[in-house]
Length: 288
Image 1: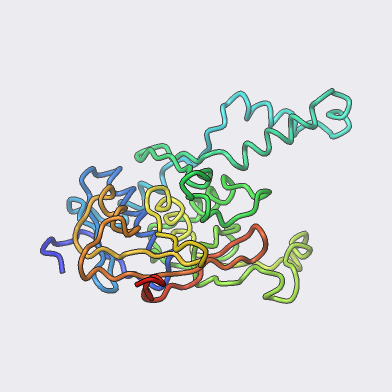
Image 2: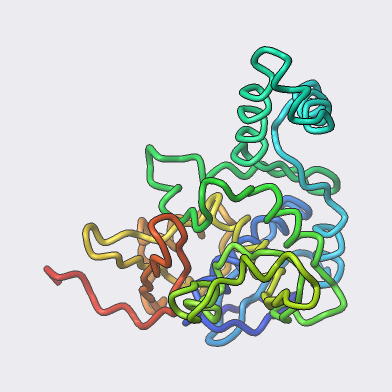
């Protein structure tokens, strides 16, 4: 139990890894807005010490940010121009169709940037070298920018932070409560052919604040992977820490006594689409 008095307390279910990493994202952005912010977990609460501020103030600052990607303005303008052309026109212009596809790919895949009261770059999903991209849950033809903007656009500082919203766009599937939802094999049919008409369209629900903050949190905070077992371990540190230190504890690089550890797996919904599954108390490595 920390001797510091938290300014913000949020109920958290640590068996939901999406909530854990969302709390990490909240700490990250709080520290960007109020340098020196610290966070920690106390049983079923996540606590923030950030100078007598409120959760609503923090969420409103995040909501007020612009979510874009690193695509240059000239390329965006060129993509807009090519997209407005009819396909026949592009076919008549040598290389235009290929250029449009290349620009569309860049728009889908480039790093994300937040700008406003908080400036932050998110590019962990492009990191194959140190393994950040293992948590990339969306397929290559899905746009990380579109998903990020949809989740950010649905943030509401007046609602409970873990509130579900309907029909706000496709989520990242970081919320383990979603489980296997969205898989045609799980449901028995595909949603895609029904999306063309309002009469048949099925609106899904998600927790946009969880999804967006988890997306932010994964930039610095990671889980330790147990090789070849599809098991990922995280530690819910129980003393006030800044993001730079907390991230090392979260992935087991530093050890804090009596800080609970959890493990979770990824659900491979298809070859490319993944979801976070619920966490359980850490069962130990095979050689422990």
